[in-house]
Length: 305
Ligand code: CP
Image (cartoon, rainbow, N blue to C red; front, side, top):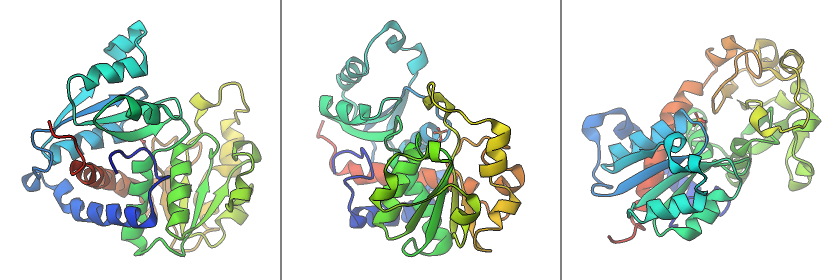
């Protein structure tokens, strides 16, 4: 593959190969002395039109661990503010001959469009409510390292599924790798017709979490709810917030995940987020290894400069 635009389009073998490569990168990602030279002389531009803490910083660390020159484009102080479009911005940057552009944009499909306009590799770091492929890969790596497998596990994805690119990429990946995926949310936050695609849906946390191996919580994405139903925080936490009482519905050895950023007291309580069953910090660590694996996998397809 020349780009990584989504989990859609990757085969189970592609996913497994990326996870195996990421597993090998975990040690490298932990120690600067072990840094590699796979991307030495290559230029990586991180172009984030939406806010990010985890994804942008881990792509920067990953690129540097592989020896790339990494440039973080400051969109807030760029000519985007003067009305320059995504495509004109990308074509302008492309003229500086980068090898890889990592893009986050608020419009679903923006990254696919951009990939047609540039001659370097493009990595999707989140496009609207569409896909966030490296998040799904790091979640899968975290699950596999803790449970030893993905196939046959019951994974409950809970919360604002309708607006979540993380949910979408995870649903595609987990289903492809043989997990049983459940979606747990108020009916207003479930994508219409989703049950027809083979995903079990639940509006009750008690029923949805029963016998779950993994409980994956999602933030309410208010910024994408323009005008539609926005639940009250108090009501939402009461029915859908993961606290110890609701976590007890899952298997006793169930593990809790959250892609971040978390809203404590809204979709998850602090004691669960920081508790013994939480993998949230490990997910962040695996983010660097997965992004190294993705960049390394793309390295052999980069244009000759
Ligand atoms: N999970 C995730 O994408 O986090 P950021 O928005 O902080 O990058």
